[in-house]
Length: 435
Image 1: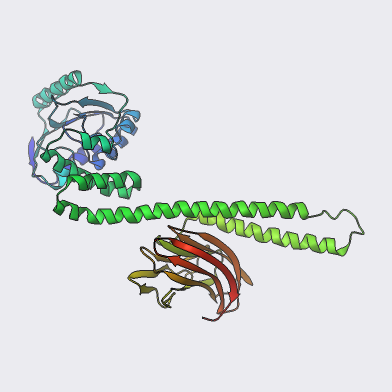
Image 2 (image 1 turned 180 degrees about the horizontal axis):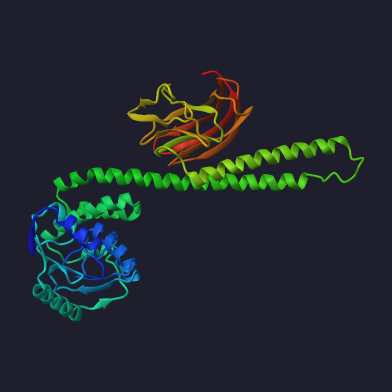
């Protein structure tokens, strides 16, 4: 039985691959599609034998492409065909019962751009045997690899390829850029994108712009995450130092007639240790749970650990007041916005956060950062940590407490931000105020 496919080719092949019970043999000139690859890795993990024959070139085997070494390590068998005598077939045999053969490569380019065909053959033992014999012949002619060295993107640029192949690679890189950004391989994604742009025409470069912007945003997130972790580690180190100092100052009350001041000092030290322990736990939970909301070139995050409703307010250099009642403000062409507002409604959560950020180019000037205890009285004093994180310049995490009296307001810090330099000054205030 034969069925000609001109549309939905991938869906048909994937269905048969997922249903494979014994063996999958693939001979395609180019193979770049991660959906096929992921299914094959799963089949290998199920104990299915998978053998692939493809061309060893920068399309199939490049930095940022499919991980063929992982395929081999998972039990897959890989044969490479080499220029100038390449294997140009496009067929697949599944369990010696299903055969696909046509013009269709297992690539994004074939899936999204070209007009392709393949024929699905079943119940034709003679035809399937002929293709299996050809597959066995290809295995003998093309070396099996157990270690794979990828083409770097720099090597790919030096590869002797014509204009048509450059266009092909450009489209494949564009598709892989999207996959890479989803999987957060930022450094490779950036290199892939810049290489793709170097291959593409002006019109193609314009199409790549949204991907470029996405990579920039994701890369900013990684930079901020690294800075947050570094800042948290620095604060934790300082806490451990303070705890050690306090413990050396604490005197065990072994003598009955010890002066009262000794016991008072011990009590004070115990309170200080308890406060440092709570600060330590807040910082560790921040590192474990990560920030809620978006990153940007400037980010201010408030985290606490009760059901109380604390509110984060920021007054930007233009006097705009960003908070729950005015979640966005534009100043000097840059938008600051509150994107996480916790414990404001009926649903209360433990370990809540609030978050205000500027994605790009925050305005220069002085920012006032205020915390308000708005509602719910779970504790007399609610501990919190305020994280001030900038891509450039200084960053700091401030620990403090705010009294549970409704609308108690604290100016926690003022910062100075300079475009191009980032945060140049951070001044802790921790004073009650009216806003």
